[in-house]
View 1 (cartoon, rainbow, N blue to C red):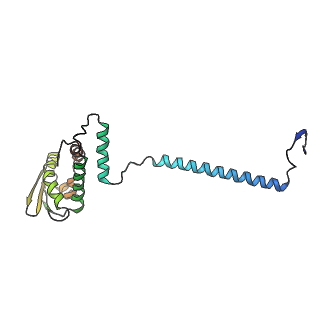
View 2: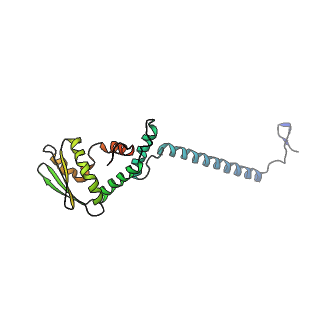
Length: 199
């Protein structure tokens, strides 16, 4: 056995290291250190990405998002009467809303005090128009104080919206912008889902 210089009692378990063996050991240590550094960097990057992105909240589809919101409210409320809950009714309403916005065929005629909209009762959006517009017209009037009336004439629903002080806004919003006016939609959805309101 070779002795460590300066320490006569210390014995090596192998022969004195050769330059070749030293090089091999150095390469192995370098590789191990590099691998450890890479692993640590990967973990740090994953943690950083998790912090930056947070937790996803979007269900991926508008109707599903609206239903998810209502379901969360219902499950958090200890007073929910599950015997009256009707998510299917809410879904049908949301389908109507999507159909109305996507497929309705509407013409607009401006007037000095607002506008008149003629929405067809035929075609892909006709059914949604017939179910939603007569019900929505008085809701808009109640929320805004504007004159808002809808009546069926032949193959169309004629919706007249007027307000001398807001005529420019009515004309600019148009049919689809006016449907979005006010904050009644979420309450309406909750009412339908809990059986307190029908569309």
